[in-house]
Length: 215
Image (cartoon, rainbow, N blue to C red; front, side, top):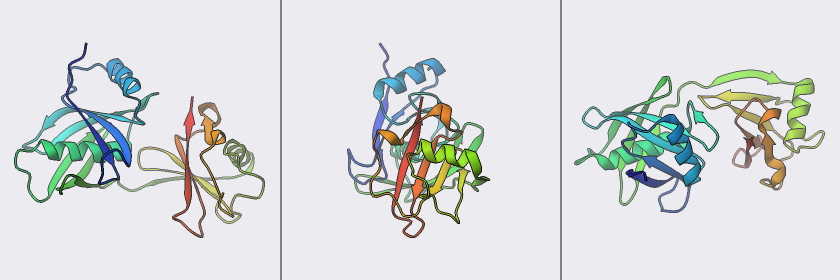
């Protein structure tokens, strides 16, 4: 039996049980990587964050992020959720707190502010790394993997992988798909070189569909 402290938080929401669910495990110093992976599968969230090396007076900690399949070098909402949990652990937090979170081989600066029943958190993800434009046979293979039909990709905006630590394939379509999220949007890991994808209508950037790879 494991006796662990943890918080279940909802990122990108001011209300419980909405937004992106996340489990943040406190004081995970003595957990092996294998146990972290097993625990992540057990709780069945998209990601689980494990806090080690927590230094509340120094406003710093190390965050390890796992999906059900693997440990990630970076992911946005687990970092924000971990920072929010750290904020709640302070005995007397200031109006605004700054944190230095070690995530894999990088340091992520975050800011937190307490509110009534929720915590506002923001971070500096760093400069995005832009991959080469994807064209030709590879673009056609990715198009087929995403269940896009011929001619649906935007002719002037080629697919491209963009990363601030977690690679995303950006695929601009014309026109935007009316619906998404069916079984066809789960792409086999062997067919892609990216973790997630956004399929976007560039004429209306608020409309987009997220996809991800499964093993």
